[in-house]
Image (cartoon, rainbow, N blue to C red):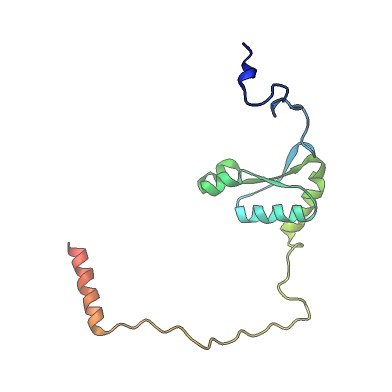
Length: 145
């Protein structure tokens, strides 16, 4: 008896792992261009690289977000790019670290606007003397019992 005859899909279809398993990824092997210890910085770097047209991925980011005590043990979050983009990615990472990719909040010719005063300030928290006495009795009762 042929075991593939009882399967719900035709035997002529090959498994996904059989389809050209020796084929390289679309852009080549991944290369680690830098390591960072902060997941926010890693995401910002990945965004900068992708904005430059460099496909980037983060290694160990989810593991470190799950257990931050592993950050040093894993060597931080790896920012990885395909090997064909490694040189351009290193230049972008250097520019990011120098602050060359920083975005100014205001243009040079714009005047900062003064914040508008609040018209409805939040009312303060006030308790009467009787409320303070009741609160003190409750706290003493909780501490003693």
